[in-house]
Length: 185
Image (cartoon, rainbow, N blue to C red; front, side):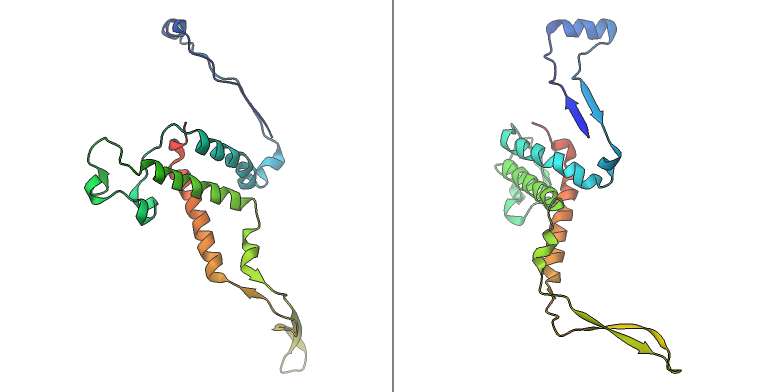
């Protein structure tokens, strides 16, 4: 994959006239070349691009979009005095708007970073050791194989922890989709 996005052109006073007369507005030059292997694991390919962009946006943001109460933990939610049925009473921004957006950004970054790691590995330990046992039918012939834990089998899986982290990752991707239009500086 090769991506080249030129700087956005400065808007000059005469661009208004060029747009009015000819429909011309200067645009950034954009070139994107996608190779076949870029889409083999497109979710991972995009994670490599999205993570540094989210980090930069988190550092350089000049504002924060509104975040719905149900998308943040209880301690970050707007109080009942700030809302009527979940909506802001006025157009004033409450004190927690930036903290809520920072939390959403952190969850999005967590989800994309998880895509680039083997995060599941921390929930399992030990060795897997199974012995194959022949299953014999009534006529004395082998009809299949059964597997039983062997002597060195010590494998453990924290399924609750694995499911909790998977839910957090899925929520980070959900937030990315929901607040996609809020990814601006």
